[in-house]
Image 1 (cartoon, one colour):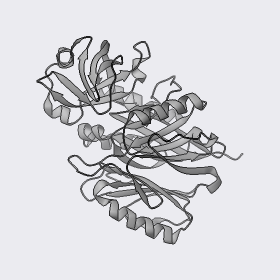
Image 2 (cartoon, rainbow, N blue to C red; image 1 turned 45 degrees about the vertical axis):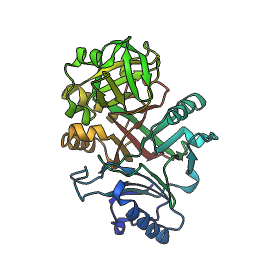
Image 3 (spheres, rainbow, N blue to C red; image 1 turned 30 degrees about the horizontal axis):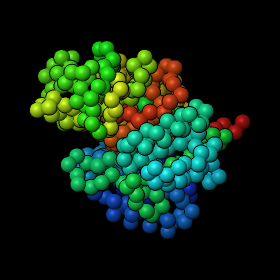
Length: 366
């Protein structure tokens, strides 16, 4: 399997015939992405091209993270065998017909919703130990554009794109890593409306939160710096629970709004940032499962970008130093993958404030 990471229209670097291309386009560059698609289809008529909008891109060349005009569009280009993958587009609330090829998959969604979480749950139940990684399409901060997906010439805004990969020919390995630890006791959501949490343990949520972390800094809220660990049952291992960032605080009714819907009866713990040493130790678990040589897709929460800034470069440098991998990535608002636990569960989660890494490699034919 040959592959290459390229940025924008640098198609001269493709020296093989690709069969699948995954691209990420900053929301303001959708038209340019469509034009590039036409060029690629003219040159390679049989290629499948999928992608999604982003709040910033990542590429396999220094400085790795998009800065102004660098990496407005990035592509992972490869020549995977045509019979070893399938690409499907599913509309929201449409029934999915499961196939063995969905056991390994890259999943792109145009919106974080209860439907997406139900789909991930159904994969976990229906398929044996599925390996599913991906992200929710993003847009730049303050943008009026809607998140969108792209598949073979068409843009979609209420859909999911599934790239299923045959486990007999290719291996997909990866994990979702966040930089927080759960603090305090489990707190029950006792009053909520949509994405807004009003009460925890029958007390105003803001009072409970500030009792744990001190007075909330509005600037940090704007960088998605106060995540909740959020799950249905309080007795499950909390370090594996997905995160949900707080996106706004209302001091009048002492409520907080999360990036996704929350239900009465769910449980939360407040997320506290790990030390740098613990962050690197968690990242180190990735190296033990990494294939000898692989291509990778990275799905980084927009909150990672906002909070870490240039520190994100150091994480990417760490990955590059330890793994022989060519990577392409995107800043998302929702990441999909297996928790980075020593004994991970069988459940695929929709995360937030997380780095999800999917490494794809050709299996040894011997």
